[in-house]
Length: 445
Image (tube, rainbow, N blue to C red; front, side, top):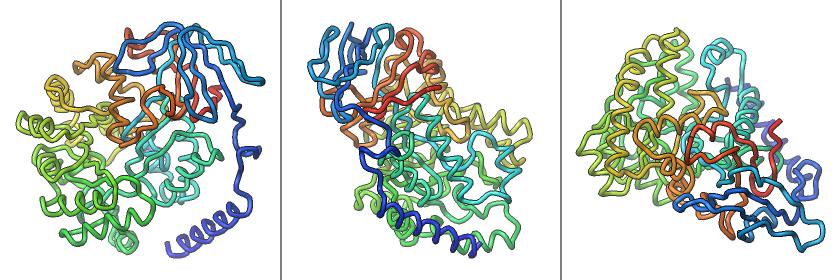
């Protein structure tokens, strides 16, 4: 392990030095070509998902940002401007997934387990590069990555931002902060000799408020833009501790206050009611999963403006994986309990008007299939329009990002197109026909 860490550090230093010598510029062949001006002719345009769609429209893109939105099909006045013909398509903002895990294999637990001892961080990075591209091609132009190798995800984030790699804009959390033995403790289920080795390198576990403050600062030091902590047990951790509250209220407050002081929002992985209540009372920004919700918790979330990120596809996927034998036996009762409760809990929250931001926990399910979440949200009582808003304007609000979520002047040129209106059939978002990220068109074949 120590040799591997030293080799990885040397590789990272060499990569950083190389990047300083030959960082790609906008004119470099390593970065996709982006015309200075692009005119997009849209048959129908949902420029703001809180309003009705427009008819024939033109979106003018300059230097990766939306410059203008006009009615009708405007013809370019600038020499060399590109025209993209989407007159037979429905155009809307790039989608935002607030809960993904790009690092490593993801979505294939049998392969992940069978290769675990033969794979290192370099292999996981190659998988993450492919996962990012699959996510972008599915129409998700921004994601919040809530758990992976901290330095690896930071490097992937920066590689995409610089134009070297295709993928969505990433807002990254690094590792999930967890109590010892909790959902984010990497020693769970390991033989003692392996557990001792892993524990010696772990910086995300904490016991007591002071240690939890340290754990947050450690993740920020490694580049985390958002903090995630395990308020309760989890389905996929190899420990039969159930889904109940894992942290004390003091530990949660220490995590949330420290993150907020450092300018980071906080997401709580949370299943059981008592864990979610404590996290909301402590000021958390989002409850992710929220599998068990009661009337008191729903009322508190509404009063405090706390977002729910429901990840409805995750318990369905995890239950199928557990029953097929590709997950450890300890996960089976937890998967069954979560799958049984989630739909009704989310139905109650949607009906009550709790703030909702779209999220999938992709990495449990397969990368590139994120949009399957929409049908589950609609099945639980959301209209297609509200579900789309959860993946655009509302997700942008939870991120604290004013540059994404709608197609308006000054915002990032993140646009997608589908064959017909997803406001009539939300499953049309599962078949994206066009993707533009920061003004660059992503080839889909």
